[in-house]
Each structure stands twice: as C-alpha cells, then as structure tokens.
Length: 117
Length: 111
Image (cartoon, rainbow over all chains, first blue to last red; front, side):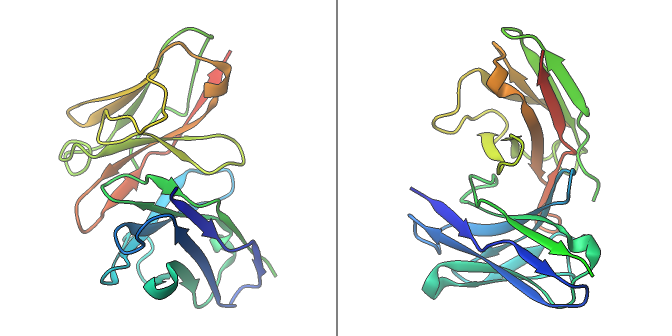
C-alpha cells in the first residue's frame, strides 16, 4: 500500500526558515514523482511543484518559482519543501502528492504551517 | 496561469444526479485528456475520484463519471448520497512549463 507520511504541524515567525518532509513507503520511491499542493485557510488547492526522485528533475508552478525549494533524498525515500524566509501569507496546509501519470493518485495527511509574529 | 473555472456550489437531493463543470482553455483542458477530479471532505486530504477525463481508480464508486467536450470537463455524480457532500476540485495538465492547474472548487450540498 502506497503511503505518504508528512512531518508535523509547525508554528513559525515571519522571516524564519522551514523545511517540511514527506516520506514515501509501499512503493519504489524513484518510480513515482512527488509534488506539493498548497491550501490556504478556507481556500482551494494550488499546485506548487514536483520532483522526480530518480534524477531530481524539479519543476515549479510559475506562482511558486523562487518562493520555495523542493528536494528529495532517495536514500531515505523522503521529499522536502522548504522556505528560506517565511511570510504570514505562507500560512496554509501543505499536502505532498504522488503519482505515475498526470494525476495526484496519493496524498499525504497534510502539514499545517502557521506563520505569525 | 489562471485557475480553471468551476461553479462555487451545486446541490441536489438524495438519489438525484448532479454535474459539476470545469472550464479551462485550449492550453490546458482543451489540449490534454489529462483532467482529474478530487473529493475533499472537511478537515481531510483530497481523494482522487477520476483521472484522464473519465477513468475511475479502483475502489471509487461507479456513480462517479467524467467527460470532456472542448475546453470544458464535467464530473457527474448519479444516485446522490449524503456521503457525497464535499468539495470537488478539477485539475488539468497544462504542458511542461505550467504543468498543472486546479479549478477553484465546488461545494456540493446534498439536501
């Protein structure tokens, strides 16, 4: 059974850095791509970017290019989403997602990031 | 890139059928048969319901079906049940530079 398990909720101050994680299990980690989806409070889903763990090829939504960094460590089947300087507007639930084709077949449980002074 | 356009809300009575539309452009929905639909209950992660326009993942009820015409995709739920009450999102592949774009979401109320 494919599972994506995300790291726990975070509370940070504006300007701080953060790296959240998503560990895949139940499948060959390098065979599926892994992506990230943002959901701001009370709002819809936004695709942020994906990485192919096999070769670390990474693509970003134009809306998130330069704002976040997506990476992966295939030795521990884990993908990451990181910020160098958080803003209050980064407050949201972040989901990692995975699939083989062009759909988000599998979803993590979500990581709630709260940025507040 | 702009989000795909969905109605903000739809409603129906138990046993009825409803259809949710998802309108994009010739750069996304119109160019690729790669539209997917997701169901999200409050406080839960989304769940894949339809992929590649009309295919159902294993375990998804055959009451859910998808279609596409031109730049508009549609999700139809037949025999509405109380458990279908949720938010529904469409998503389309939009090429290698943009990759994916979501719709704004539709809240389904089962009366």
